[in-house]
Length: 190
Image (cartoon, rainbow, N blue to C red; front, side, top):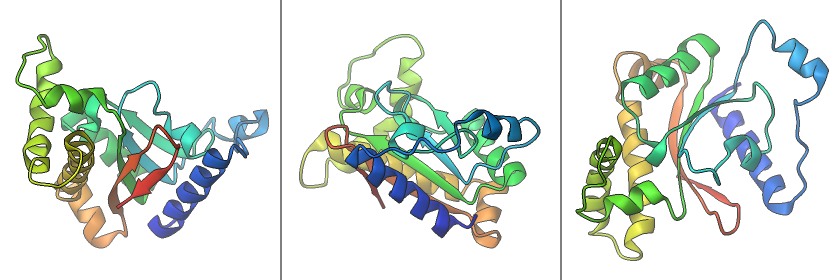
């Protein structure tokens, strides 16, 4: 499935989710059986680990449809990038969506200067550039930082060499950012 069609499927699924008219596709026993030997997810979604953000539900997709990676603040380091590369190179996914969300705790924690301790600081360190860039934008600082963070990660993935950059350049792969509104269920795509 090409990136344009994949995006259309996500948008249609999100409309069903918002309307409360879910189809719950690809969840029966025969479909599960068909996935025993192979998977061909039409899109990769890098989203936050927040328990309120479940891509398969908010896009009304089923087993094998999405290759989902969830990490606080939807940040991308080596292991996350490697997972996305795997989906693109070996599973044929043509669309990569980096999705931030309303009221993201990881981004909110990045707005201040306090050290949260443990490994949480590594997450905040990756988000800080978005926080600084968002200060220059009109509107709510947290919302802007969440959106900018997703945009930065999407740009980093587009330029990640060699696999993703080459796939974007020559294999029709698209990498985009998105913003999920917890309050309405709507996903806005850039």
